[in-house]
Image (cartoon, rainbow, N blue to C red):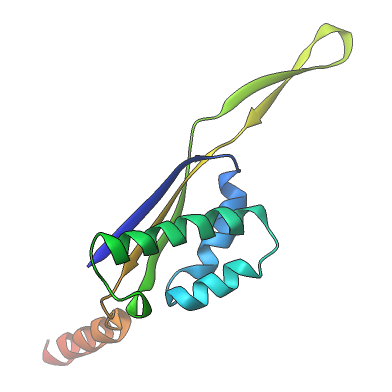
Length: 130
């Protein structure tokens, strides 16, 4: 079963948050929490907050065992931008884009089969037959 948690309008640039989110994909939840705890970045705090929310959803709403959960997806999408202007020389103005993010964490308790090995075996079998 998949459990989802979404943090919308996080006040961080998506580029900065994606670096942290990529690190925890495919990890068991306990290991992902350890990595996020010891990563000294604002994005690690926000992604950790979303991961803890997904854990609470799994435990309370779906009655799943927390120890068996794995981070299936950690996705950071663009949110709306706050557009501001900074005064520049000779009466002009320079744009400032304050970016926001939508952070999505998906946990699963299913063990993923190695898809690459199965596809390679099927392709080899098809090549031998034909």
